[in-house]
Structure formats: structure tokens, C-alpha cells
Image (cartoon, rainbow over all chains, first blue to last red; front, top):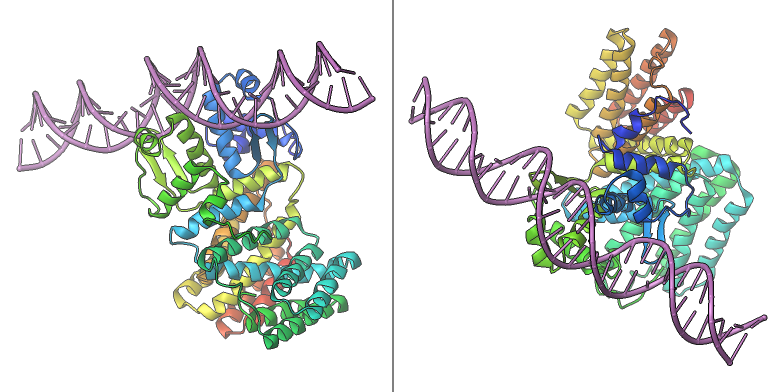
Length: 234
Length: 234
DNA sequence: TGTATAAAGTGGTACTACCACTATGGAGGC
DNA sequence: GCCTCCATAGTGGTAGTACCACTTTATACA
């Protein structure tokens, strides 16, 4: 990554004038997800701060989603988890801003882009997952399986783009929107699609799938838009 | 996904079986951004935990970006800050995953969506900001002002959508990409646009602006795509 | 060789004392 | 009456200790 020697700048900028957080950030940069950090006691000595202060920063970094402390085991570098972002967004939604519709709009934007990049990527294996999700939905009429297949299709679409950031944000939003759904209708039967509606969904998915196969990025994006325009919150 | 009926509430799910975090989350939900939380000493008594444990959770929530502790003043509910997300993403980038290009691709997706919604929103005041940014870039040849005007245009476009989530994510990405730029070329003169290139940017901005004014959402999105296709990382 | 148990190591909590900073309000001057 | 200054109470931040609960590892035993 950054090799310039003068890099006191951006690191300290990230955490203001806090040298401990900056040192931790630098340490994390040298590690891979899954790696274990030194013990809090060792790290406190190494950074010349008390364990109390160290733990405070570790907590912040855990909140950011880049660390995970496991009781009895140690502290590990986490692959940034979409769920962490979802948690933050969930709290933000409660505090009035970030309305639900605006989040759904972001999700549409991400899927539209995913369709575009899936065309360029053109990975037959990943695209095959989309095919299978469509076929699954065609084959069943159990409303739970239908919903699962629906989600599988959209998830496959995102994966087919082969874009880590796209997947990350989309997962976070899915996570969040699902949390919200469970909140509002805990027991209310998962809104089951009518037979007619289900056929419409399949039709739209087919169109998206075929557009991606055809190699026409604009057509693929249009197909995604048509899907969400016709079936909001699908 | 897990559909267990035992879902007491999503609150407890959010923080596992940690009652302290759940209680804090519930408290935060009842407050507005800017509101002050009880002092740590009071809150610790109220939640029946030590100040140590309480501070640990407060640190996590601060990392999530929903709280801000100010020395000497108190702890306040924050409007979820894009910069917090940017910090997390920045660390994630260092850890190999989430490559820069994938993040830029998300930004494009968001701006494309912004153009689409700006058409629907059609707020003359917000659109006027775009106009002004274009005119500013036309009028100056100072490379710093050009860059500022460029950013102003894109920011105006995002704002014109009138979509909080869109703005939030875009700001986070802008924040992040800018941090990264400063990292790599700290002293390297801000890549100044050639005269030719500047004219091209202006042309593209004009096309986006006019498309939004015309009310054609598809045209607006196409204009955004044309912009980024011709001028990556602009 | 395999299993059970002990030991070492880890993060989590509690409590205390103190520091540095901020805001508040009252005393003094104008 | 009004403003300035400053002591003071209140706040988050840090340090250090001791201990707990859990996990992992090493050891002893069968």
C-alpha cells in the first residue's frame, strides 16, 4: 500500500490527534483478516498506554467493524462485515433520518450497477446461479421457497458483478431491510406473493438474465429498472 | 436466513445477548441527534454496570458513528456521519479487500441513481447549484478552483436527488477516495486538468444538467455514464 | 494412543483514584 | 446594570489493580 515515508498525515487525520488509534490502524493495515492481534496486556505495554485506554480504542474499532474481540481467545482482524454497517444504519433510521425509501433507492442503484458489471464480467459460473434461482422459483409454489429463490436471484446478480464493494453495500442493505421487516411484521406471514405476482417476478428475472447473457449493459440496467418499477420492494 | 420465531426483538438480535448495548440502543432511539446522554457515572448506575463496562459499549457505539463523546462536555447522539463509514472502509482497503476500483464503481452507481431521482425531484433551487458549479468551472482557469467546482457539481447532483441515504453513502465514498488521493500524492500537485480535459468535463456536466432539466431520467443516467466512461476518476 | 484434567492465557468487569477539559455561576470591577 | 474573570462543579479520559469467565494449550494419566 502506501509506501511514502511521510505518511504521518492520513493516518493521524483519520483519528484526529490520537496516536493510539493511529498506531492500531497502522498495525491492522499490516495484518490480514483473521489474523490475531497481540494480547491487550502486551499491546498496552507496546503502545505505552494503560489497558483501560487501549480497550477503549479497541471498542471503537470493533464498532467500526474491523476488529472482533473474542472472550478467552483474543482479538482478531475482521473482514469488514456488512452487518456492522447495517447496525449503524438501523440505529440511524430510528433517529428519524435515513428514511426507508431512500435506502431502497440505494439498493436499486447497486443492483443496476451490478447488472452492468455482470455483463462485462460475464462469468458463466456466477451467471448460472441466476439461472438456477429462476428455475427454482418456477418449480415451486411454496411461498417460503419462492421468497428464498427471489433473494437468491438478487444475490446472484450482485455476486455476478464480481465487485466486492458492490456486494458489501448490498449485503448491508439487505441485512438492514430484513431487520426492519421483522420489526414491523414479526408474525405477519411473510408477505406471500400471489400466483400472478410470482409469474411477473419470474418474467422480470428472465429479462434481466437474458439481457446479461446478451452482453447489452444498457439493456440489463433497463431490465433491472423495469423490475423495481413494477414491483417495489421486491 | 434465520427465521426463528424466538426473535424477541430485533434490538437484542442486533447486539447478541448483551443487555447493556441493547439498553443503550433503546435509549438512543428515543433521542434526537444532538441530544445529550446522561453522564457515564449516572448511566452506569442506571444500567447497573460499572463505568468501565459502560464505557466499553459507548466506545463501540462511537465507532458505529451514532455517538460522540466530548471531553468535559458529555456524550451526544450524532447524526450518523459518513466519515465514520469512510474510516472503516479505509481500514478495509488496507486489508486487501474492497479494492479502490470497486468503490469507485459504487460511486458511479450512486450518481447515476441521483441523476434519475433529480429528474423526479426537479427542485429548481437544487438544480441551480449544478448550474452555478458549471459556470464557475467555465469562468476560472485556476486548477484548484476547477477541482473545487468539479466537486461542487457532483455534490449538487447528489443533493438534487433529495435522497438522504444516497447523499450519505456518496459522501462516505468521496471522503474515502479523497483520503486515498492525499495518501498517494501528498505533495504531488493536485493533478491539474489540461485545458482540453477541462473543456470535456464542462461539456459532460452540461449534458447531465440539460438531461435533468429535460425531465428524461434515462437520458440523465446515460449522461452520467458517458461522463465516467470518458473520464474515469473524475 | 487417547482422554481427562490442570494450567496458562485471553478478553470482560469492577472499583478506585486522579487528570484534563468544559461549562456554569457568582464575585468583583466597570 | 452589565461585563469580565475566575473558582468550582461536572464531564469524559487515563491509570492501575484485582478478579472473573471463558478458551486454548499443555500435561498427566489411563
